[in-house]
Length: 636
Image (cartoon, rainbow, N blue to C red; front, side, top):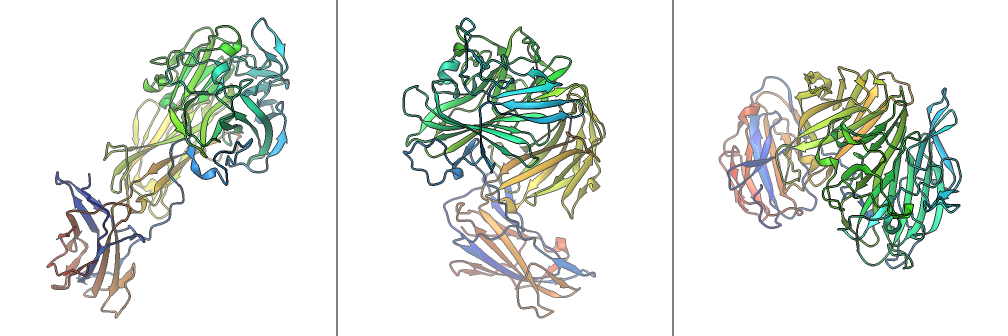
């Protein structure tokens, strides 16, 4: 890696007279192993710099055509990088010791109105066929009946449960066992405070179980498509009878793109103390009255699904703020439903830290569980819940009917340069954009994938290729990437049948504009000319980049044309004399630069250095006069 010492800043102003053409300047910091890391010319000089080095030189143009020497200005990236599942920015004016019944949680929704637990919302799957996807915090029949499971006692005080189901011409097609009687065997979101526990029960860990949740309120609002979003908020304590520790928000947010619902939890630590714990989610599944349909894997660790020939239930885990581990297992309880204890079963080992099928990289359709009574669970990383901080967790559940296309997209990246799990300027990465038909007995046709490549990435168009579902690769012409608009547009060569994937990949280099920022890359997969309910899928990935310790700004003026101000571009002719000014800055957010090298290959760009024109000035006013700019060894 880069050899850095302490926080110093070098300011280098190099004015050189060169031939007009766009030059490449590389600030190189040598390592002990003689490898180099180059910093591109399109980086902005930091406004927080402490020391600068400046060089000036002149060169004469030998090109016979008009040329332009330019430097693109860096665009600002407004997205922020944060720890997974955690958002410190959304708590406003909260007293650290106050227990708030509804904390200031930014869920991205406005216009909340009061609702009841029995409110049932829906989105159309096939309006003409009278089929809809429904979701509620109560029972699928609009009641609050609750089968407590010990002798079949029915009560009317059902705890809030996330309930997603289909109505097919009035028939309820459930996704969870006893969807009309309280779903007592489902944990929903749970909090474990004993990390080594092998059999946590609903009674002791479910955040919505009776006795653990107080001050419950329900709300509803509309999304951009006019679909209803449902919210439940309340106060939760890990020990019944103690002062509540958390404010919780359960959210049922319908997808804008497919027949699924985002099952979300926002959790706010409303105390003055940090609390260690682990969030998990578990459901006792049932599909269309069948408790024993096998559970299968989605490819690329996207999740799992259950299909019975007429309906398909899919459990999506590979989503933003989604779980890191998941599995399917046999449902089990030791007494009443509140003593259900299956959530950690079949992990290796059977505790919170045990791994699930995510380490197996199963192919699409591989069997995960084939027993008589299926259930599933998912887990997030164990962590410390800090005071005055909101955390977010999500997993998605959807149901498709036969013949329905369910378009999905996923975007990932891999750093090919470093293995320290950090990204740096000049690192080479591979981005993969995937399209997936999760539908049932259907075909997603005429798929176009588009992506506007971020300014912080320099794509290599010659590396664009498509990988088909069977593993075959198809090279894509470089012209599919428009250098001017930065748009990548690729038509997939084959339609996607049920459970099939195709992906587009390409190589790119992280440039200086990304220093200390998070690159947001996104994609859209859409049926060409599509107008159906479900014909589009979007995805994105965030690429956090370390602060680059050195940045360069390069400007030029045409001395022959009697210009007096250095600019990012000028126009000249053969034999014009150009003055170049280069500022090299070491960021105050980085460390000292040792063994720095400034290099500018003028001949490569058709420029000839005017002898004796190079002047190197450090921020301590030290001046040097290098004979050339091919390799200037800089002091610390």
